[in-house]
Length: 105
Image (cartoon, rainbow, N blue to C red; front, top):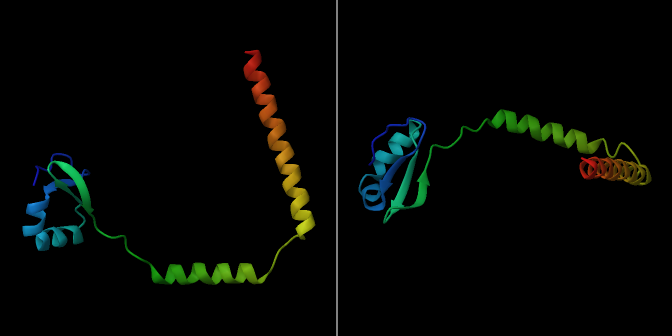
């Protein structure tokens, strides 16, 4: 394994060494370290700690989405189309103005 001169950079480890020290690498990954596994000096894999998963936060987000969808659309399809057309026209007009200013400069 290479020296850890930059603490935020992952440690490079050869494939053979990764195989022979896999349990150690996993234990160190549990503590927050990351490793890049190389084969013939070329990076081929990464061993990193997983992110923690907040199950309660995910449930709350799911409840919020279901409640939001249950309320149904806030505008009719026709109004949504009109809003889209207005927005599209505004964006196109703004783009035309920017191009004109750029061409004049």
